[in-house]
Image 1: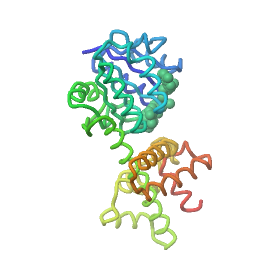
Image 2 (image 1 turned 90 degrees about the vertical axis):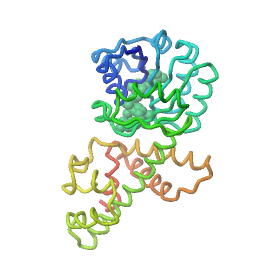
Image 3 (image 1 turned 45 degrees about the vertical axis):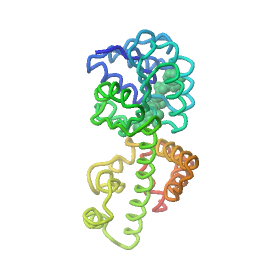
Length: 293
Ligand code: NAD
């Protein structure tokens, strides 16, 4: 078992670091928020007062931070040149592809293998160790990082070269956002046409319209398996986080000169929902807006 520095112990990182402890690793923790650091210490991590101190002497560094700007600053200023040469760097935050590639290139230049390893799964999956990791980076870095990531998730998949993990993540979430909107539209129209929504579910869930947003995460309360809709759209995957991922997808599409009209429509709709003050609600709450209620 190795000594790992964990930077960013918020809603996701807190649970992930606790799972590294359960797997027998020694975890050096750093977060700007005192409360997050104290919680990590309760879970068995050793708290540090600065990133530079936390990364001294470790074999690997894992980060779970809010955005690309912070990730770049933390790695450039406080990790690279301060962690032992050759330490493996794993950034699990969801950030833009261009920054992920840029930071990996700077790290490689200074002799640090690095992977981008964003996750699918929310706070419950982070706590339960059932995340899916999508990993971008060279083969040897992937192989070295796989056992560390496996201690925090149920699946670790090599997506390709640096940035490919972020690419897979935002393409998946763009598809999820668009399919949720389409699913909500279908239920809202079915309702206006006088159909019973459970009956529509019974038909569509075994027909060609079937999709994950319908059969695993139904936006209609009382229909399909239990989902955030049954808890007044609390918990689950927040609208603000879906909007963040859709914005990252739009940036990537612009840079890659790709047409993403459905993703762009989903982005505008989630922006409207967030601007209406509903950024904290689960992303299936978009059905209320589409129903006009
Ligand atoms: P969060 O805000 O709960 O946690 C982020 C933590 O980073 C905070 O504790 C904050 O204090 C800390 N932090 C910020 N700047 C820092 C710095 N310079 N040095 C050290 N610590 C710093 O966010 P979260 O929900 O845990 O999300 C983290 C990442 O995971 C994001 O990139 C998010 O998009 C991604 N993600 C979140 C979810 C989810 O359901 N919450 C799901 C998948 C992916």
